[in-house]
Image (cartoon, rainbow, N blue to C red):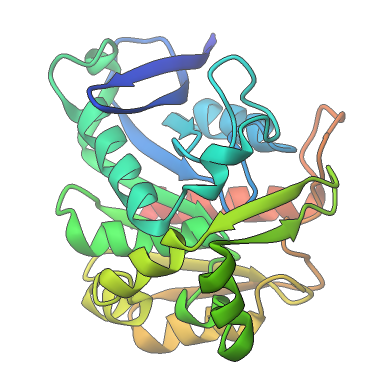
Length: 283
């Protein structure tokens, strides 16, 4: 039977807590770990992510997904963005720190389900912005054995405003982005750009990709309007040993949406999941 242990709170000293889910078959047999990172304006319970978790668990993996500490959710309300102040205080460095903390948590001998995990086999999956986070982490953390990018970005620098827009952001201290689904005005405080500048070398996805020596899978939809297919081609070019899979006519979320009320995965996302499972099992 698949165990679905959702909304567990990881309390951190002098830092924001993290909400985390575990999906696995309770067998006391160590299973390969698959750790999933959501993207920009995302959260662990978005759309069909729970069905994705189910599918990986049924395929024999210990599947972990979590909310980044500053994604805008709260412990009480993990879906959508009740804490816009926290969202505005987020940055790439915080997300990298969050992921490293989660990796340490699930590989520590004190982990509550240590008998269920094979800490010698850890795969990272990142969607969209999360694709960059897992790429950098895989280049830094020797515990990672495979990395998978779903509609992942290849460059963080190009996503910041330039010229007068950047100056206006600096002057006001905040800029707002409209959430097309919730209609919220979501803040980004200027610290986001300052942190990027201070950590530009670490946050260089191209250099991180070039450092990878582990199996690397890149999956992208050819109709992705949020992250260009060329970004996937860039990642593949920077790591010639990577595998690039293009899903014909697929969009940025591979046919899913939020909420996702079906009991099955959309066709394109099913292809993505099965391709990923086969890759992790066979590399």
